[in-house]
Image 1 (spheres, rainbow, N blue to C red):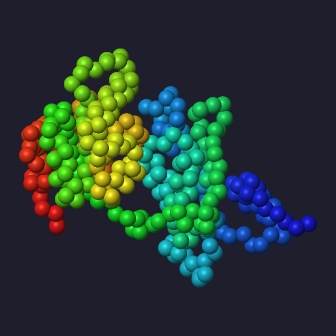
Image 2 (tube, one colour; image 1 turned 180 degrees about the horizontal axis):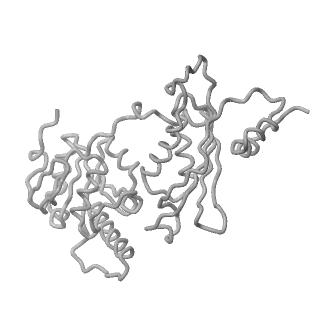
Image 3 (cartoon, helix red, strand yellow; image 1 turned 30 degrees about the vertical axis):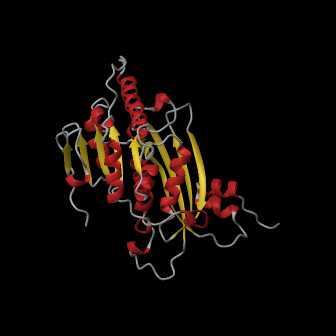
Length: 325
């Protein structure tokens, strides 16, 4: 009987003992070499449910990578193999990149990162939550170089994202008659800019729970972001890093809606959401801003990048910036 291998059996066999794989593949072409990482457990914040926010849970990773056999003797040289660090680094980097809701997303990103390695042919990823039920709840995927590589660019091949201006507008600046003139000026100079605002000058609801209060404060900022967007059609409210980067590349103007990036951040901003100017300065670091400009409010202390402070009725912004090289 002709030997047949399905995607399901491939996934199952990927995590089996080598003897089980050998017995199941009798008569099949010689399989590629494999390296594996087994039962790698990490404490991480992940999950779509509200109960999974603000707390960590144990997540277990099992990864098997099929690799091309060496074309020359290894000579016991570690530089000629796919290092196990490639797997553990892929997991660590994707966990650090942003907070995720879905194990499926995490598994997909880990697989894509591993398949950037030139020796990697196919990767099996199993990710399981260990603390969400009586057993392990997880997902298993298999991805090949042919599936992934057409959609993945090596980091050095990606189009560079320019270092945008992050411009914090006080409420007086949001409502300034000079607003459109400032944007005209930035547009003519070719500066990509992301505007940040604080909450409107209205009493804010008060919640007893800190997590609820943070949500309220972030939503208050987003409401004011839409007020700014309504004052000039070039100001587009944006919440995701992908769209912010796209806008910066195309010299568009964004207004930051902070909830997604703040709540999905692996590392806490370290400031209260109601301190909107300090939050904007933290955000400037997240997007690798070239400069932060505060209009109508003094810049917070401890800036790790060049900062300019301007009055709410400043005649211009570009004139206060260094010439572009």
